[in-house]
Amino acid sequence: MNELDRNRAMISECDDVILDALAKRMKCLQDVISYKKATGMPILQPDQERRKMQAFEDKIRKSGYDEYEAELLDIFKYILRNSRRIQAKALFDYNIFLIGFMGAGKSTIARGLSEKLEMQRVEMDELIVQKQQMSISEIFDEYGELYFRNLESNCLIELQKQKQTVVSCGGGIVMREDNRDTMKQNGRVVLLTATPETILERVKDSDERPILNNHMNVDYIAGLMEKRRERYQAAADVTIQTDNKTVTEICDEIITKLIMMDNQKEEA
Ligand code: S3P
Image (cartoon, rainbow, N blue to C red):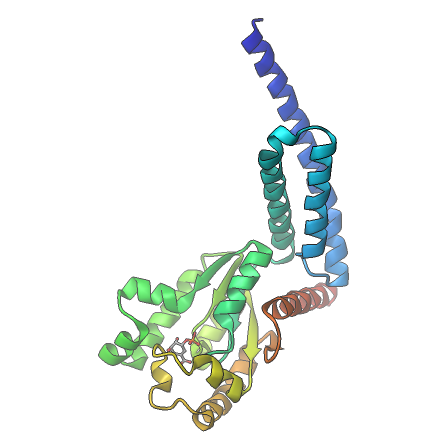
């Protein structure tokens, strides 16, 4: 055996050790999942992840591996990210549909959730815009609302193929009962709410909400919200009020409520 072969053999031995350790680590993760499931604890605990990264850094320095510090930390970061993904997969093996009035925070929360849970994210309006090569306003102007609603329903049906995706729906998705059924078939539906005043504040500068064209005022928003209220509520598995809350607070609340709901379903 020459030197190259000897080193290659040693690398293979190291890889075996790494593989065994990772498999052992994943087994331990399953227990963590069971615990979090039973207690409704959030998956991502930034403090715990920070503590872990710090511990890695300290260990690398203490062990004299400084030369490879950046590369080693990169690997550990990746391992932690995967831990989050594995945990989320075990807890949420379905799509999470975010519904609610325009400006309720669906897109922002979808981004936050997909990051926290390492899940894929789809923005329904964006998908429609991409497919049609037209803006939402252009679609409304040229083909009318009914045409847009059909595109929306088709988009939802296509999304049934996907799993473990956070979907930020258009505000009017609940207007069709079929859409509500489609969402429930392979997912949980989370309703985000906000007061008309908060909604106006969030959407007042938008020119991509044809439904609100020439109606950018609290009274109109409150009226339309009221008209849709029952439909939103009928579709929702869980409801989260978003006024004066941070993205992290809202995401944690969603995660906790979904886990509690799933636990109850399992017990029933
Ligand atoms: C609509 C909401 C919009 C968009 C379209 C119609 C509605 O989505 O789908 O302008 O009827 O409420 P956002 O809620 O994401 O703005």
